[in-house]
Image (cartoon, rainbow, N blue to C red; front, side):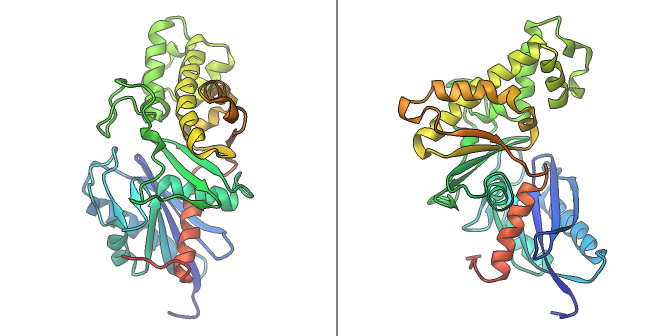
Amino acid sequence: MDNSRKECVVGIDIGGTNTKYGIVNRSGTILSTGSLPTDAHLPFSDFSSRVTSKIIQKINLLESPHHCMAVGMGVPDGNFMNGMMHDPPNFSWTNVPIASSFSELFKCPVVITNDANAAAMGEARYGEAQGLDHFIEITLGTGLGSGLFVDGTVVLGHSGHAGEMGHIIVDYGGRQCECGLSGCLEMYVSNKGIMRTLKECLTKYPNSLLHSIPMEELGGKEIDLAFDQNDSAAIACYEYTGKMLGKGLATAVSILSPEAFIFYGGFSNAGERLLASTRESMNHHLMDVFKETTTLKISNMKEGTGAILGATALAWDVADDKIKLNY
């Protein structure tokens, strides 16, 4: 390595819609960020070449020369143990050796983990979970992700896939999920799930303010504004979403007894509009010993940075040989 070049790592957060990345130095300062469409319907080779080319270009454009020591990636259905991206519901890629593929392109070690696990790592080191040993990170986006932080570390499980709260069944025989199951939590509390609920609520409330906005232009900000104006459809949408989310959270509380659930991204910006009904539902579905023992919090990390910072923390551990990779 050229000793005149400074050290950096890259964090990549692969989302169902967009992929975000950041170049970070040893102090945790983000030197450069960017995003590009994931286009998950296209071949993986198209995605990997676009991402690598863009990030290498950004590294070369930094004010001073830098050398990339390692890359950390938050990957939907990503397995830390074998470096594989298995079969995420919202992607056309199946069983992709994502770590080794990107390692060849970047010419440095690449470590991956579930995208929600990466967000949990970022939360623990930089966010609302600093000082907490037991919490669950819930990422709300195209899907619903979750990272389990127990006894001060992320739980991976025997297969490396622990923490798929998005596929807890909260409505048997309910909405069909792309994972092949029916009634998954994700189908009620992801972006697409909430928008489906909103459509159903709009048919029940023909006088809703939201009827004046084309469906393709509706999102969290519009629902929040309508909610604040006491709009019946917006209120019903968040009450039903909170009811289903609370059922899923109660299941996790009964098993793991976390100090907190921390919500990051997407509809978490609704805050108490959504969390009030969620909290009520969660406690309703808990046995007495667990009621009121777990708090619900909104992440204080800037949206789009959580998984990136968590992934870079993992990358630095690899660069410093604190983690040995098996792939």
